[in-house]
Image: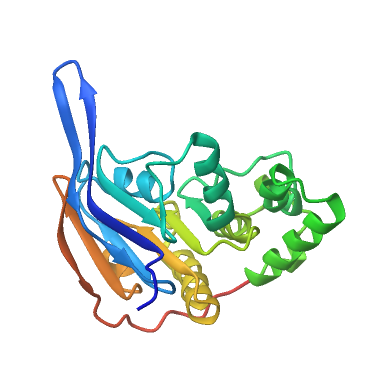
Length: 240
């Protein structure tokens, strides 16, 4: 069997507070194969954000281990974790996190600037990713000139510009109306289906979670459900 892209072994995370230790995650054992599309749900404070921070190599476990593409994350230095994160992972957030004074191409190309890619090459790669999300006509627009859904598409293109293997999306439809949410989820489904992009998506919305193929549910820092999702209804036709 192939090595899982994500493999956690009794993974836990605790924070030391003045009032004592806070156990944010306890004994999490999860395998994720390349090409899966997973929704993560649970009430506020259940451990979802901590779980995503660990998967994204933004933090390391206090107990147990996390293997990303077969590599033990906890034993890495900060620099090694940053390199692995930049090579394998793309992030999409609820708030888009675009720089308002940079146009779409420049925003998408930012990760390539940090990677030292020459200007012409990074602009070409950024344009290709904008085509992938249906924004080829908006390359020179600034974020304030775009709708919320278009800004989220720019954020998705930026997350993919390094050809990431893993997309971590934290409430990516939280600021969008239902129709625009459908359009964003349709992009995720297409990327997962056509490119075998592995997607782990945190959401509070059951209608969004239904479009994933697997659901992991957290409660009080523990995984209380991990299984297939019922087939989703057809999405409305996405518009550019």
